[in-house]
Image 1 (cartoon, rainbow, N blue to C red):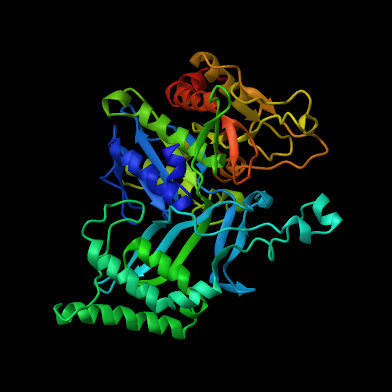
Image 2 (cartoon, rainbow, N blue to C red; image 1 turned 60 degrees about the vertical axis):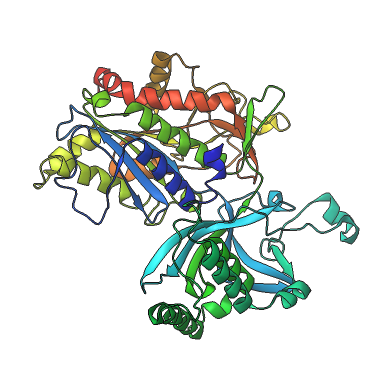
Length: 511
C-alpha cells in the first residue's frame, strides 16, 4: 500500500521502482551511454526514459548471444486530471485551476474528493543550470464540488451528466482570501523564508534533494545575491514569453514552498491531481484492497517484486540462460504513442542494445537478433474486469472472472489482446507448476466494445510472442478502485514462475 500512496503519478511510480531496485542491488545505467563493456552475465541493471518509464533486467549467468528475453510488461499511468499549460482560471469569486482529462476516467467519481497535486517541476538551480524535481503535496488543496440538489432540474437529478470542460475544474481558494494573502511575490517570500530556515534539515523525500537557494540578506555574499538575482531575471524573461503570466500564482507559490525553492526558480511543471485518501484494506475479512491507480500500479509493483525475487544476486541466476526483464511504460491509457510508451522503440531498443553489449560490442548479426526475438516471450500484465454483482449481465456468461480466485487470461479474436492458444497454454502450465489456481478467462460480449493493452503493440513491433493477463478488479478507472488481496500473491507467484520456468516449458513446445 505504501507504493500506491507514494506513486500518485508516473514520475513517482518510476522513481519508487528505481529506489526499490537500487536497494536490491540493481545498477542504474543511462540510455545516453554506450553499454558495451558495462553489461555482464549475472549483472542486474535498470534505466529510465522521460523519468516515467523504466526497464529493469537481470542477465542470466548462462546467457549466450541469441538467447531469449523473458519480459513482463505493465504501465505506470492511470486516468486523472492534469493541469493545463496555462493553469490560471477563476469564476464567481473562486480561484480555480485549469485542468484537462487524461485517459478514459470515470469522471463523476472525482467529484467531492480531497484532491492534491503531484508531478515534475523544471527549476533553474542556484548554480545557473536546470534541474528536474519531483513534487508531491500530501494535504488536500483542491476539490471538484458537485452542484447542490436544489439547483438541479428533475432531469439532472435522475442522470448525473458531466461536462468535462466546465464541471471538472477544481477550486483552490476564494478570491477574498487570496487578495488578503497577496500575490505571487508574497508566496515567493514565504517559500524563500522556508528554504532559508529549514532547507538544511529537510530530508530527501518525495520532493527530492533540497536546492540551496536562500533569501539574500545583508550578511550574504555578493555571489549568492547575484545568483538569486539571475534566477529572478530569468523568471522575468519567461514572463515576457508568456509562461509565467498564464500560471496561477498560488499554484506556483505552493509548489515552491513544497520544494523549498524561490518561486522565481520554477520554469515549468507537469502536475496531476490525485486523491489524498490512502490505500486501505476493506471487507469483513480485509480481503479487498481499495486504492487509486490499482490499474495499473498493482501490476507494476508485482512485476518489480517478482524480478527482484528471481534475481536477488548473481549466484541466484548463474544457471539462467535468458535475460529476465520488466518494462513499465507510460501513456498506455492514451494509446502508448510517445517516447516513453509501449509504441516507442524502447522495447526493441532494449533487446537490441542488451544483446549487442553482451556480444562484445561488435555488430550484432541480424539473424542473431532475430533468433533472440523468436525465443522471447512477453507477459502483458494489465488489470482485468471482475464480474460486478450488481451488473453481472455485462459479462459474457462463460467468461466471468472473480476476485481472489487467481489471474485472468484476456482474449479477443480481433487482436485487442495478444493472447492465442499457445501463449495462453503457457500461462496455464506455469500456473499448474506453481500450484496456483487455474487461470480464469475473460472475453467481452459481442455487443460490447473491447479495450486493449500494450500486449498487441509490443508483439506487433518486435515479433515477440505475447499473452495478456491481469488481476481481476472492480471500478476500473474510478478514482477509487478495488481488487482482491489474494490476487496480489497469485500475480507475484505467476510472474516468478514465468521467470523461473518459462524456458523449460518453451523447450517442450513444438514450434
